[in-house]
Image (cartoon, rainbow, N blue to C red; front, side, top):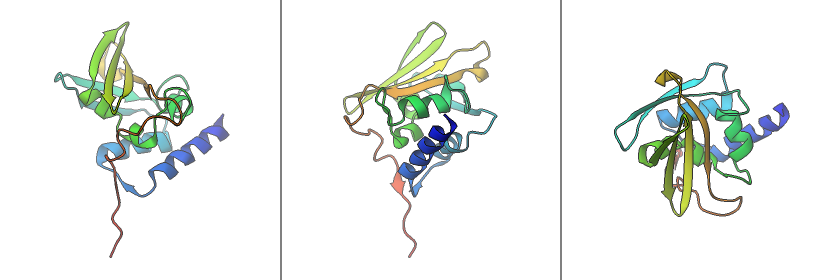
Length: 157
């Protein structure tokens, strides 16, 4: 699994390439590439003016970074691209919210594709956990709704 995860991570890095990242995207990139032991903390305001706080676990195969990389990043089920992963917080900002069974699910539809982000609700909001991020597109179909969200780094003159 570790060797496969290293290959997947390298593909993720290659897909991002020389794209200029904003601070939020850089934090997400770091979580997916470096996977430090301590989870990354996020706070995002949704379209309902709720502040959604959650942690992004980086070393758990059932949730967070490793789950998304191994199950949904360019996968057959729930395919998401590196660009889409770097912009997953936009699903919270713009998506519709459904709360059920100790989970918050945000669903955002763009270009005919539904993107879902699932946050597990804990007693302390700061310890809510990002469980998964995926789409309803199959491998090889659909378009990347965030393709234009990242601009390449300008070449020095």
